[in-house]
Length: 453
Image (cartoon, rainbow, N blue to C red; front, side):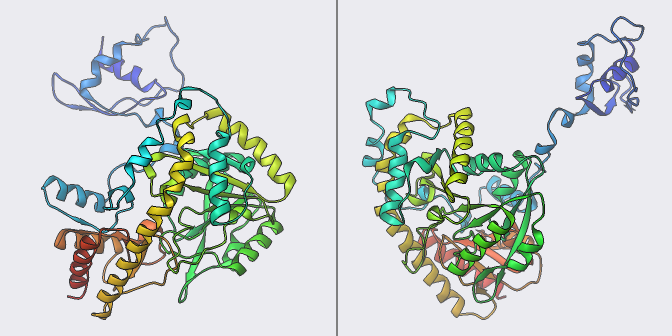
């Protein structure tokens, strides 16, 4: 069969794009022919059998992008920051990581015996598919709120494997394709991928800093339109560590009532207020339809256990309608497993031992950070109220990414550039306050010394 015929058959295939080809006999580049407007019918002259084109594959550079949905057209090549990390890892260089977010690798003590024993439950051998989750698991979550925050009805709770899955359920519940959700900026970047997968458009509204963070309500009002379906609030925000103030809560409720919007509130760091004072949960918000997300990952420092939840609150009729639809969405996937749900009461109790350890770590590292900053005049930090992270203010001599790469290569310390979290300008670096203290002290000293040169 002639080589041109094979190439012609390739370009007729709707899911394959031939970028370029080389003929094996003459080793010369051959540009594939332009696609024909009409596919040749089987049996007519010039038709190429379906499996014939495969003989050319060793000599083709083929783009498979047409096979995949546009929602997955992410840039999958590593950025310069990630590439610098990989180069150091390949060279066997030891790096001090000041970005650690996994508490199970932060040199903290867990009651492993009690945690593992909770999974040795014979009831786990029974399959009882409950869309909202087993009653025992939901009652354990309601008990956490009752003891630590406010009364929550177990029937208003839907168990999920993660807050990411919770976001996905709520996005699906509220949005048609290309509907919009307002999200804070700066904040955690995960929402962009979740929105892409649910065909939802995220529209940012700014958080403004002036000796603390505030929601920019004039910008919020400018961002809303007929396609807006909800407002996302992170309480406290990550990485700014700012809680939603009481007056902001009232203003958010008024805004959502005015435009008939839902509130989606991420409260994974709610229990980590640095001053020890309990903050009010949105899980008890009755003013507007509200979906509050949280889970074991931060509450009990157990991200590997994959148990999270959505609490639905608000006006009665809206809550009933939302829960009926959420139950169908959850029933479609039935992602929860029996052992983790049955172990939920024990795993949630672990918060009583792990939260004090984490808060002590956060406060100790924050004090170390303040001592280091007091010894120099180049860098500072932004005020924060809760969470596990601190935002450093550094001189704007280059982009945040370039600054983080320079720190990584020169002193072998890993910090995150502010643009990872959509800070609107350069001059911000992010460090984790749950880093083991020895590593934090050493890495911080090296970073500050470099930045003050």
